[in-house]
Image (cartoon, rainbow, N blue to C red; front, side, top):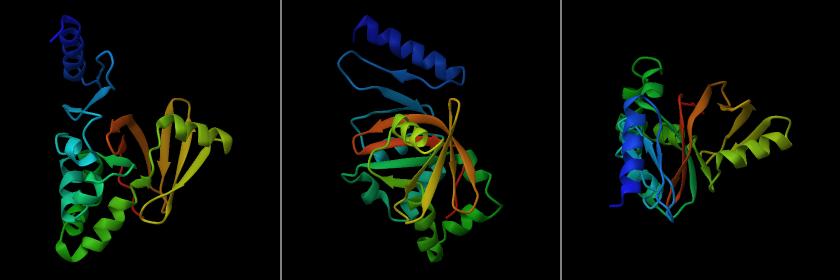
Length: 189
């Protein structure tokens, strides 16, 4: 391993220890972003990366319970707006447990696919679309309903059909089959 690579990795570890988000870059290779204390490698698919994030254990459990592992491991491309564990914990008490029950698989699937847009949308794509539409972009989700995006300075906000609102907290986590944008809320269709 080169001295440069060691320095970049040491800087990333220091950033994470201080609560930051680190992006690792090695000359000639795509960026590897740190999420939930784990490297999100652009050569791995959405599921292969998400299972390593300590901030997304609830999302991973939900994806497994809904039977979406094969889909999100597939070719894609997909844009996933990935709620953190804290976002799931902010739902009314008992919501997550109820959604994870086998009898509620269809509702769980609807919630999860409401966080997925077909294709690969970078933050720049969303911002550009919003600028064309007076600050507001709208994309149809895999679930079928649309979510709206509002750009406010350096922030990108998501707004659900039923009024839920959240912020993109980590953008452009590239995957082999799409991109993940970490969000701080769970949108309910």
